[in-house]
Image 1 (cartoon, one colour):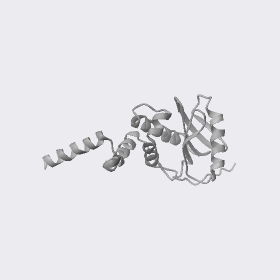
Image 2: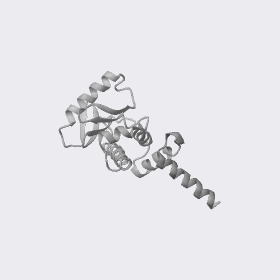
Image 3: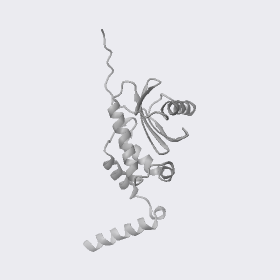
Length: 177
C-alpha cells in the first residue's frame, strides 16, 4: 500500500458563497482558478444549491470539493475547500462568518438586511479569509476590526448619529487634555 500525501498548504478555502433562497448569488468570492469564468461559477452555484437546499446536513462532497454550508431564513452560506481539506477548519470559517454577520446585523441575518450592509460583509470576509488563507476564526475580533475600519468614513457619508458620536468623542478628549 502506498499513500500519496499532499504537501500541507495555508490555502485552505477555495470559495465563499452566499446565495438567496432561489439559488441566486448575493455574494461570491473565488480564491483560485477552479472556476475561472462567471458562467462556470454560476453553473457550480446552481449545482451546489440544487444539491443542498433541501437537506439538513452541514457538509457535502461535490465535484471533488468539500462544501460546508448553513442556511438561515432566506440565505444559504457556503465555504468550499478541496476534497482533502479539514472539514472542521472550513466549518470554523463558516461559523465565524455567520456569527460575525449576526452580530453586525443585530441577529437579523436575512437577505434584505444583508443587502443593506454589503460593505460590512465585504470587510468581514476580507478579515476572515485572504487569498484562500484563513486569517481569523473569532467573530468578536472580526466585528471589532470591521468597526475600526468603519470609523474612517468621511463625515459626508456618515449618519447624523455617527457624526454626533464622533463630535462627543472629540469634545471628551479635548476636555481630558
